[in-house]
Image (tube, rainbow over all chains, first blue to last red; front, side, top):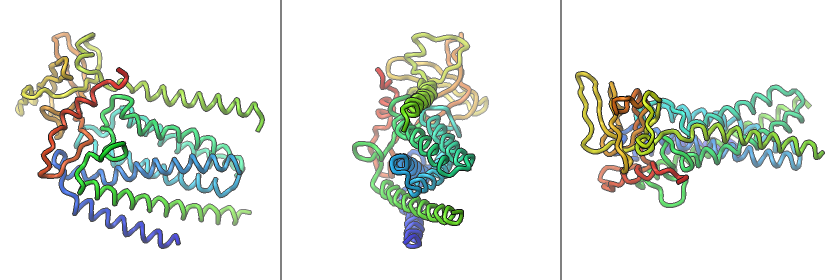
Length: 215
Length: 144
């Protein structure tokens, strides 16, 4: 099942690359640089999704105290941190040629930096506490609190003046891009979502094997 | 769960939430608009100024690297000078955010020029020309 998921993710990532580099047209204003969007937007979406899953799994853990929920939260937080890092890196590389700067402290970038640091702290906290049950409990609380930053990240571009532009797809109303660009973006969104599910499934299995070996 | 843990947890939650909020709100006034700057300009003070580059105002001296243009929000206009090249997306009728200071000589001395781009993407042969309109919209303060 997981293997099938892995192959599906690999295939759709390949399809996404073909769409992004080959099928999608060269954007008029930005030129080829705009193609970074096919990486930046899906990784940002996966970060939202991952921390949303941390939120749900953490609430479930606090309510029922099942180790399975804790493992899902743990795995999802790890994948979320990696994808938040990728989002920041890809955004930086996109920002330099278009905006003229790698980084600026506007509300969007600042709130993402806070999100990244909070979940790094979450992983640190997990590593610091030896007692497994206690680590799970503390991390569930931190995971819930930190997830509150996700809507702040998303709506920051509406609530405050920013250099970062508002979303083109994840918003009410039609996407502000031609169908060819949107199609390439959607394929990549699906591909990275599959990759996320694959990573989390693998990591959860590993965590379960670990705790069984220790028990 | 004991009530003291619930109360303690709630206090920590509110404090953390406030810290996040305060942290982001500090960078909330990320840039001032030309009308805000001209309303109360302070010479020597560092600002970030955001607006549209007025069409027809851009002057570029490739030899001396002198860049001059005016920035506008539809109500007020601010003259800006800069030494150095601007990013590729910078241009007349487009949004920009510049860092620098207001000078006593009545112009904005920019040290960094950033181009703002809209959330609209176009394929070739796509002739919808509303970019400057959407950019002007992004300049409006949502709280006012």
